[in-house]
Image 1 (spheres, helix red, strand yellow):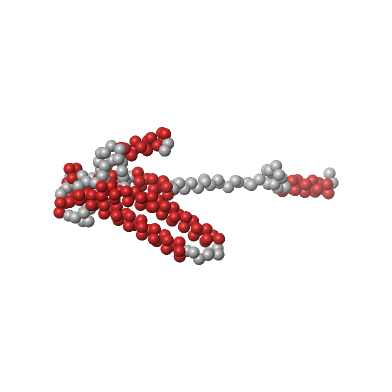
Image 2: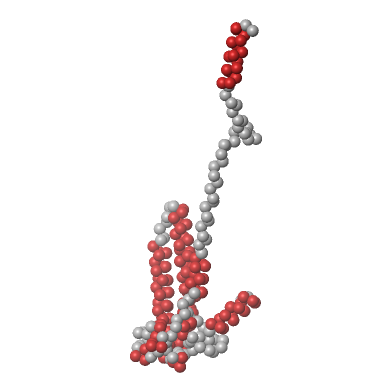
Length: 220
């Protein structure tokens, strides 16, 4: 073999050893793009916030969980030395059952009803003032819609109070006639505790529950 040919063979061997290793093929997606070498770690979805009760539910829960007033034996005779204006709810509920709806209890509940009536009439006057003050035309449609919604809500509240006002006046008339505090259906005492919670009640708790059950079963 000639020296030139032998040198060429040696160079080819050296080049073969120095040839870098083939790079691994990168996988491609169906669209021809290179797939990411490492998928990012998936983050867990944020926990959903707890559902808040609606105003109507809040209100229902408050009415359903009305505290039960217990009699305090130490206050049983407090009514004897106090006027109807000075008596507290605790002192009235502590009165003996034999004194149920005596003159002092009647006067106590009459004051309560008159106070409720006065509050409703004051609220009605404030509503009239608000409606009179907000007669200025507001150019912004969003602000105008907000004001109209507030007016509608206030008028609905006043309408409910107007119906309550009628019941209050009827209860005052029952006091004047001496019929207050007794169930319209059974003639049994409604109870001081129930009257303190709802001064316009005309049915005992049992009679009220029976009426509501009938309304659910047969309608109004």
